[in-house]
Amino acid sequence: MHRTMIAMLVAATVMSVPIASQAQKPLDIHFIDVEGGQATLIVSPSGESLLVDAGWPGFDGRDAERIAATARQAGVSRIDYLIVTHYHTDHVGGVPQLAAKMPIRTFVDHGPTVEQGDAPAKLFSAYTETRAKGQHLQVKPGDKIPIAGLEVQVVAAGGEPIAQPAAGAGTSNPLCDQFKPKDADPTENARSVGTLLTFGRFRMIDLGDLTWNKEHDLVCPNNRLGTVDVYLTTHHGLDQSGAPVIVHALRPRVAVMNNGAKKGGSPAAWQVVRSSPGLEDLWQVHYAVDGGRDHNVPESFIANMDETTSYGIKVSANRDGSFTVTNGRNGQSKTYPAKRTGSR
Image (tube, rainbow, N blue to C red; front, side, top):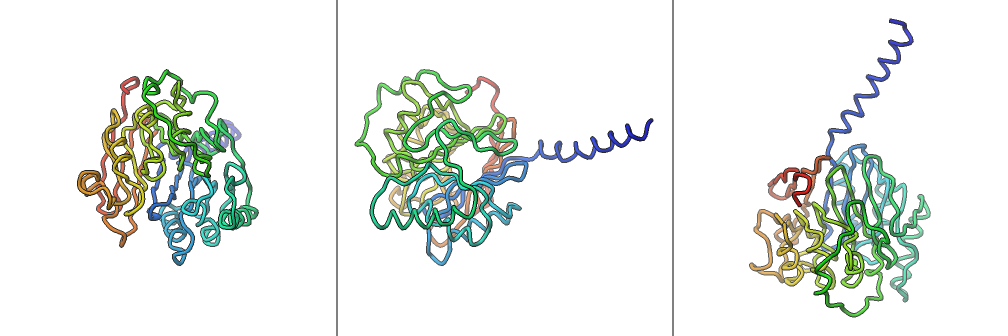
């Protein structure tokens, strides 16, 4: 065989090893305990990282250190993309402290804050000063965040829903007739950046703190989102969000509630999720004190039973749609097999 041909074959073989290895790697999603805020670290099979929000400021850098520690355990040395869903303290407050601990390459947000006053201005200024040290991507509904091997589509941003249905979505939603609107929300919550993540046949949705009426706009009169495998409960499981019209239309197999011990996990919102058609399990980052025995899942599905620990919940997903959820506190894992096409 000609030497040039041999060299080409060897090169092709060497190149195929990491590609094949990457194809077999799972997508890892870490729901980090930031005491009722949000910090969700997503690590793609390619090794790229996406962090959604950075928890609270203060507390001696507690949340930034928890995120950095999770990143180290995941083999991540920098954040490639940071999505700031909206400009509230429990979501954006920890950004400067995190940036002091590890590099953040690209900051993703919906644009300027809509809230006025000294406190919102100070919070936003601290974020933009940090953002100026990296790249900035202002997104609108329909945009995609470029991570190799994943599709991360923005489905809500700046108070607007996605105009066209996501792939495979768009059917009429019969639940819309039962919807009862709430008062309009003028805060940053209603402007949250929401994303739909697709990895092969696996789908997960995270809508930040998007509120009741804006959730309706995503799924009525037609469901522009489709169904998902994993639903991160919107707004920590507070009942200003989590309308049945969207939760039940999403038909999640698994829901993860990023509540705190005394924030989120309200009984009304918990019940909406728990009664969602097709739900197999609900996992909670914290035991919800106000929920009591009737509105908390069994202890084995709760990462933190009180405020003295900081365990997370991890999802490892495969391209065929199967995935495993693991409770960091007790090591309990449960695998959800791939569903046959059309079985949902």
